[in-house]
Image (cartoon, rainbow, N blue to C red; front, side, top):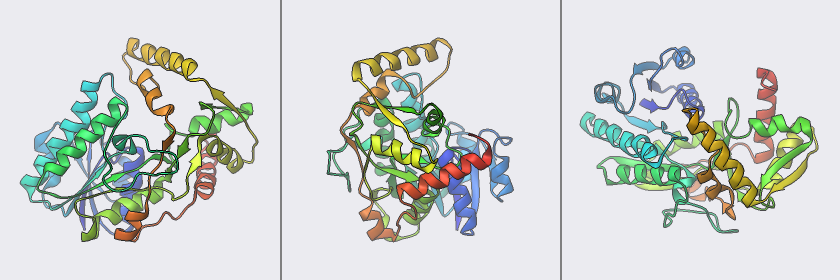
Length: 323
């Protein structure tokens, strides 16, 4: 199968390229920096230099592809307009190129944030009525709407929190905090969460592209188990052979801290996910998805549960010298 991957130099995208190449697929990666993409070239991927605003590069990259995996997107941006420019408009440019190239299958890697928080004990499934609570979530939902309006044979995958080898954004800081014996959680630690190990997610994304049963559907790709935020931190600690004391952060305090970190980032001309808007996600009762529909339609199941996934992640961090 010939496949184009956007966002291949990112955390999820690189895992996807690795999985596609291991499955024998012919992979093209759209990359902004060929130097940063050298690990993809070493895997045998063809590199096409460009970005989601480079229409000639999109046309070249899309030509002759059987499937396009759209993983690229902004997870941090200085404004809602900037999020939309990347996650909605960039998606629209890629969809236009795919249609013009005659590509049939299109898999959009969105986010649970596009659906919004779930209710405790009731994981999201299917095409729920979306209610995103952050600018990021709204921009990913806008990207989904672009895809759904297209004539492509599309599938949308909404992963929750993703962790695993090479993750710098989500859980590395938790591992580093273990040395202090204390780890903060937002609220009282009772927030229900879904998560997924990155190599398992890569398998889910390819599985979604390789069966007709998934066309025109939205799926949640994650471990079937639901875990509270406090128990997630305890699982991380156990994977490293540590014990940890959980410290809850009151909402008012956390919002104040996130307002400051976001403001400092803006003053420095940088972007960060740790801003005031992110608190709208942190203080919800549940962020969970039901992977059962993807299992039913694509025969995908996560190979790891949460404990096994974090144990493998810990081993990778240690082997790579990140801890």
